[in-house]
Image 1 (cartoon, rainbow, N blue to C red):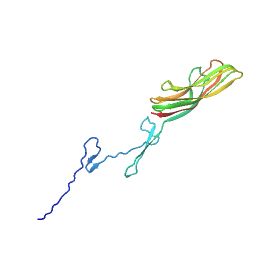
Image 2: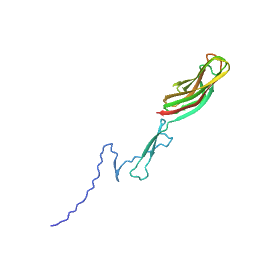
Image 3: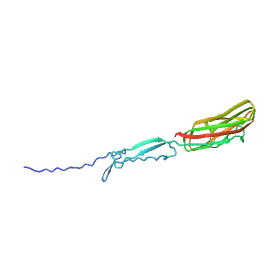
Image 4: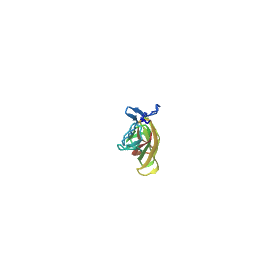
Amino acid sequence: MAGNCCAGSVRVAPRLDPAPCNALQQGAAGLLVPRTALAGIAPGGAVGTERSVDVDVAAPAPDACPETWTVGARLTPVSGQTSGAVSLDAAAANTWVPVTGAQLVLPEAGLYEVVADVQGSIGWAAGVGNAIIDARVFDVTAGAMVPLASRRVILFTDQGATATTGIQANASIGALYQVAGPATIRVDGSWRTDVGTTSAKVLWANNFRYRKVSD
């Protein structure tokens, strides 16, 4: 006796591990697989106030398979520069005078390289005399000198000048300076004469600048 036998197929739904770390989900229409889309920061943009590196992200083409994301990074440290000058003739000896125009704002917390290229000039009458001009970088916000940021620009001694004369000299101030938040810094000048009469005492900040080097 012959007979027919019909065999059917049974669909078994895939089992998902219920562990919390499993990101797959079983939806009404099938299995859901999460997808992550990355977003970059436009050049010059930021997601916070402390930022010295920009991250660029190039998305894949629509419907690309596989999806290839290109991620890159570039240094974008904040920086700034200015210049200025001041006459020291009206200032008392051994007092610090701000250099007009030579003031900058460090915009955010971080470690900065601070540099001031300065030039001083001084004149004096004939005869025995000496003269000194100093410069420094001062943190106005903290009310204190930037550590290691002071220089002697001129140290002059003349024991027998026969005519009124003068001198110019240059110096460079450089230091690494850590701040906890925005800070205003400036260049100051000071003079001193122990013997003789001086005039035309001027201090220039030819280039006063900063550059952030790290957060």
